[in-house]
Image (cartoon, rainbow, N blue to C red):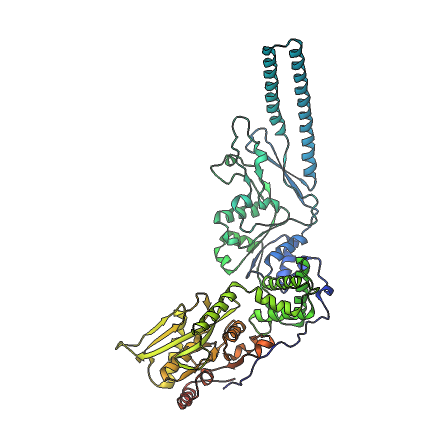
Length: 628
């Protein structure tokens, strides 16, 4: 049997830098230097910015994809930024002309045309004033009702004529589509979730199109995000959510570096208008998860791969002194970026680093899902502000972790509390065929998963059946198949002589993985041998047909769930021993026993008896168990 010991953490961490508060930590000015743990992606972004290459960033949410897109925009030059104007076309008003000029010249051109139009308006105002004066003089010289009405008619007619002239002169004023004047960095446009008109440009509908009352076509033209990103970065997260037609149009814009603007609704009067091609020389930074690759337009992905780079974003980084120092910088950055929360003390930062260790789910690693970590930083800051503190302390971070729990964690806590109240989860005594398994909901929320097994002589003469109830049917069947191989070896008889019933009691739908394998095996063997299982023990681990206990994910949240349920001992795979990160107060409440083989599991979980000792002897002599 493996050595029994309690894994404890909570000791002082070496953060690789001496400081009292994060106020002392220097935050880099450039965004590219603020990206944590994605060295490969940073190098690609720097290269792509220099050579104007497109980039596809694939990875899980919260790993810094949008930050890399913004960082690329900072690296691009600003001296070649341009303004884009749309002019009326005297030959065909439904095909406005496009003109590109250096940044800031666009405003001057529009201003010049406006002054010219204003002068024309002033002339007409003077003309209207003169005509009104003459009419009034004529009426006063020979006043009569007929002359008064005639004069009033002349004034109204003059106003109408001059108003019509105003419309014609105003057509001469161009519209500034894209204004880059005064920019200190290249444009960064986030087009995530944009509809066709917002992405590709649109022409507004004009209900007064006929009768000379309508707005000129060029004034109704609206630029798309692809045009506003000209000479800059167009960022699209979850790019596969764009329709294939929009992806095709995006591909055309990337290839041609210009794309005409037309009305996106076929029933709108804007659909009659189509501009000359509008410049859109942007760098595309597309992002998404692994599913995105399959759902993307093949030609669009081919374009990015052939004329750019594909990068997979890392979710963890090695737990080294250097990387811990980067997390210290990350906390300082989040404080500065938020602007409303105080700086963190060293103890508070240590707790953030511990949470990064825990959330990595791998021994010797730190998580790079920094958006989630940033949520804890902000929540802790809000708590400190509420308490009127100058700095955020360790207790504020611990409180924030409880307050800012994800929905899955809140649900898991409710589940445990509710099931204990109704005695679905038992933590005392012993029962035959009943075991406390452990599982995860989502990524960081553990639950206790009670499993019951009943073994009975087969009802069918041909062979026994494996009957599984609960949401984890397929996983349970696999586990029973594995344990059947073990039972055949130690018992010397075929398990097909029995019907095996396995029930996952009130299973929550989001439970993931096959880490209930050793739990199912323990429940089935207990039912078969009629040996009670200790109810103050919970377990997690996958099982091989050789009887080896294999590693699982989510070790820490599973153990925390066991602690909250009142479990005293937890069995985990030996390979996950270093994946456990518990605060000292939690570590003191639980005994964690790492195991390598199924006989070790049974020795801990089954209640002591002669039948148990005999069972263990048979299993150890029958199975090819090996220990390192």
